[in-house]
Image 1: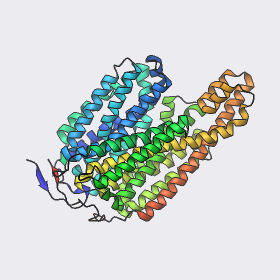
Image 2: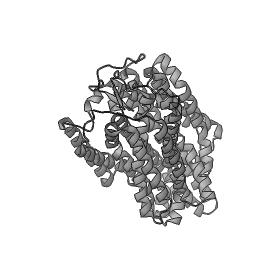
Image 3: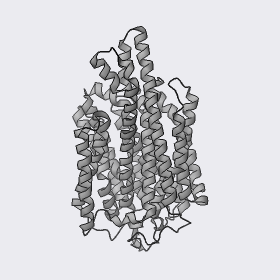
Length: 530
């Protein structure tokens, strides 16, 4: 029989599982988020193949990526609320089932439009898996030290998809048909389903209110519109199309916030933002995610197009960053226990900013050593800060708010990731076009526009020019891209330093279990653990 316990005001105060199997349960949750992380990055390598096999247009290729992101971003909050109400493990099992089945179906489709639909369904499943996996950790690991390790493991599991995605995609596409990039999710999800069902205890809020359907719709429409506008900005610029999406989405979100103040059972209790630990932990989480996504968005093309590596080679050259991230995550727990997350998170952000600054001295023909060093410093800072920021959010949440609170922080993270790619991509493109201008003199209009649009376009134009003209344009394009990379790196470094200063000043100091008692109005609400 489920039993009700009255926890203290922190998310880690649900009843501690007695079985040592909780570490196996953590492994199951980590595998689940790794599957989602792999899927997020594996597609980039496969886009040329999908274009050829499914006869997908450029617009369809964009929607194959965008449909997933929009479903993910729009559904996080209502899914978090449902998890609190009907059970986080139950929701996780449902999300795994949706993600696994849709992945298998996606591997068998025969048209680009069908794949777009299945990618949206996969995004809906992923929107369940990520926040629910994190929200279950407090019931599995009530003690702060163990929970920090668990949060670090799940966070690293998601990040590992970055270098592994291109490597796995390259191997699968070389050895099997294109559908294998989706079919591989099937057995991974099956293992996670069995392990979660057997090892993970259920947790939920027995007093959860009904779902605010109007709020859910307003939030989904608003977030999707904003994220869509941000995604489209690098392609169309800040034109009427993208501005209408962003401004319209913000207007809908303002209506959503006004409704939340009036609703008897709001989707989000806005008083949660009165808790500075939650608010500034979420801000740190979003800013670090912005930097991670943005830097990788601009560094990956440098490794592939400027330095001439293929997708698998690019993945291999990103591995030092992941190793450093693992090392940083491994020591962040002990550092936080000694100095507090308030100190360690800003230190991690500052170290990552130093890594960004190192990118400004890299040239187009620089050896890999300086590139690897910059990636190591950047990754080590991420490892120190990112898992601790995620854990800080969990620390601040009452047990009955774990689902919706985690989903809210993940929504902010998804916006941060989208902004990172869009804003730094815009900074890079502006600097690239300005630097490349003189090298395009004498080219036909269509060739000039193709070269200005992207580094890949410039390389294609250079390949069609004779002798020295092609080499000069290729070299100029590389130098222009490095100028843009430098500008994007400086922008990221400044943002991280400013963010670190705010976190240092405004994130409360936590000693042991003393985190702003009473600021979360429902912190005394019971949590049901089965």
